Amino acid sequence: MITKTISIQRRRRVQSAAFWSIRLGTGLVVTALGGIILFLLIQGISALSWEFLLDAPRDSMTKGGIFPAIVGTLYLTLGAVAVALPLGVASAIYLSEYAREGKVLTVVRLGIQNLAGVPSVVFGLFGLALFVIFLNFGTSILAGSLTLGFLILPTVIGASEEALRQVPATFREASLGLGATKWQTIRRVILPSALPGILTGSILGLSRAAGETAPIMFTAATFYTLHLPSSVLDEVMALPYHIYVLATAGTHIDETRPLQYGTVLVLIGLVLGMNLIAIVIRTRLRRKKKW
Amino acid sequence: MGTALTAINGARDARMAQGAKRKLWDRLVRSIFTITGLSSLIIMALIMAFLFREGLAIFQTVGVGEFIFGTAWYPTYDPPDFGVGPLIVGSLAVTFISSLIAVPLGVASALYLSSVASKRVAEVVKPAIELLASLPSVVLGFVGMVIAAPMLQEWLDIPTGLNIFNASVMLAIMAIPTIASISEDALHSVPRELLEASYALGATRWETVVRILIPGALSGMGTAVILGMSRAMGETMVVLMVAGGAAMIPGSIFDSVRPMPASIAAEMGEAPVGGDHYYALFAIGIVLFLMTLAFNLVAAYLSKRFQQKGSATL
Image (cartoon, rainbow over the protein chains, first blue to last red):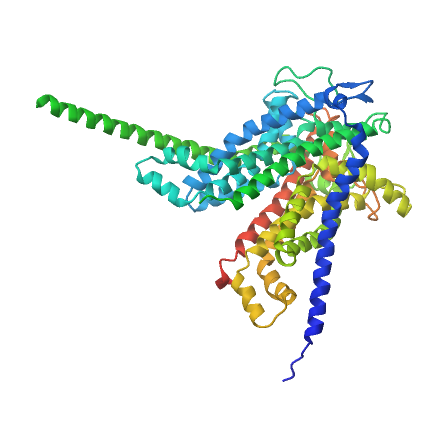
């Protein structure tokens, strides 16, 4: 039998070539993120001012600010979290505290996974058909918030379930051993211990809802409105939709370029800021677990 | 003495009544949580019901085969043409090309985090990749339109920078974090003793990666790739702003296309509710929904079927 021997030097060379191409690939990915953000910062920073943040658009949107869009996005995302948080936390409690392994649980998990994979534009169609037309909410904050709330539900469920599962079994046993019922255990022991993790999940949901465009295009967002919304049945301006409209429609695309960069920066600041907070909370939590 | 006994009995009765009440309350709470636990399933069912309710109506005007394989999409002409073939081809084209970019880079990032980077570097790179995942799609669409398109047009001397290639690059940026983070989880779940056994036999780190780590994590990485592709296929704003919007079968990767989500988003505003065009857009939604659902089910099957439970199943 002839064994082929490859010298250790050659094997090391192969390894170092492979590792360097992996480093190169990862470097490319990180550079893409850094490059995009840097470029947008350089182009857009001059557009940012208090006036830009706190004024309404003027002169057929070629001047002025984006205050109504900021307010609209705030309403829509808070509405979405108001929908997704109770449903999501309750679902997570069911999954981690009540459900037993079996067919039902498999189907429920499959449902959550597939809900997470539904394209955002399909959520938009669904929201249009159910909330805007069938339930007659019209193009409104209510319809948009419900649509976005359903969209971020899997995110909230995932983060909350992970948080609940990290509460040690001994906590549950101690509480049940003292004579507490299951509900008392959940309310007084498990939920408080899982709260920071659940908070992280809702911040992630919040930021996802803030950045989505397709689901609100037909359900909530409007091109331009003079007044701020006065009820949940009003339509609103929203940051992502504002970017899309300024960049693609209208006759002043080049004139409004600074406004577009400025709006992009505000949206990125909002979304990445929330994500950064969530990541920091989670890293802290994982490092300083008290139990 | 009689009164004392009654008092004790009374207290016991009250305690038992309270216990019964608590038990009843507990059972009520359980059923509330069980019902809300099913909310995701109910929402999935509602989505399907309303898509089909609005979308199936188009098939009274156009045959299913004619709709899917028809090559002319002129929904506002008189008479209109409802052939979504070019839109499906457009979606497949951008999904395929973007996966050619996203899969190698996503897998490389996962390997970097799991096997190459020191712990301290990984703690910075991992959040950076997670941040990339949270970039809103409209921002990437904007970057593709305003930055990438003019550059491509100038460098390659082509009529428009809004084309399959540009859209694919932007979609790849969206898919890379998905692929990287799920792959990394899969790589981490490969049992440590297998890697140590490989080192003990004298294999280098790279040989261990290729022969032990990657084969052990293959099903998880397959799941990651499919979920990444599904995300690219369903993504709307990037293809709406960057793919160019021509509803034609493309001849090269520098041609414009109109993928399915772009068509829905661009046309829904002007399609009158209850008209054929409106129904046709919902029918495109059905096609898109079913295609991404198929991707997701395959991914779920892969991750379940080949799940590693310790080293014994390898």
